[in-house]
Length: 332
Image 1 (tube, rainbow, N blue to C red):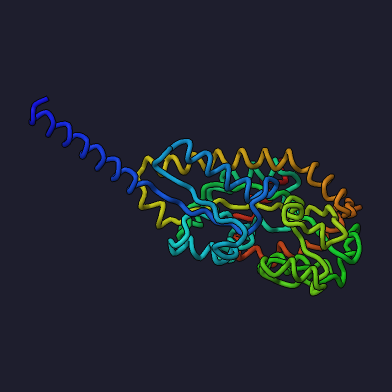
Image 2 (cartoon, rainbow, N blue to C red; image 1 turned 90 degrees about the vertical axis):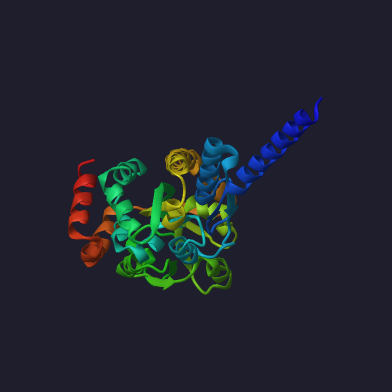
């Protein structure tokens, strides 16, 4: 082999290694955070893993999604602030916290708005959902879709909830959100706004009597260990949002943006299917763990008592958006 050929081979090798190093250096690492446990039955965790799998399958070594469950990067409020300022790339956030920065999202927390998950999906995946996503862009957030926490139910250590009078006087932890506070006040309960990280200890110590929460989150976060009664009130559909920092999103190539949007849609569909399949198993497991599970007697009684909540938040949600939504759900 001539000296020139050797030089050419060495040059090619060095060039190849340089390009490989550059490609590795340019690989995108995305931090995805949420506040609950990394459990196979947790709706947030299911969403996170579905998105990670879908995006990494599309982009291979171009991207890595690093997962931060269990409040490692803060509570919902702190994660959402991180998304706005670009210090956190992705988050899975419950709707009530999103509504604190964009009041139009209070719409989805209205009590007894949706009669079924299918009805909620049609609204969230249609014109109303798109309007909400567009609203959020003004807050520096890019929405990748709405996953499902399941309907929220009441758990407590005082008594099972069968009629509205069973809520009276019971200290329920609510999210730090005016719709939930007003909902429980209208039912005669004693709402106690509290950050998620404080709730389990508060239940153990009796600082609160109960909370409202999807059944899957009851199981994945071991609330059966400290709570006696689970009443299937299904008072609010639990929308959980897969969100991305708009600052981060806007800096990415069109190819990566497209892959992220597609992965978000795929993850939401897969997550909803998984949560639906797990629902009955979750209830069976909670019964086996000692919780007493009951249905409410007459949902219409509850709806009548929370009607003032709709009137109170109509202006902040937007009268046109509320009317469009009520027309949609009444016709489906």
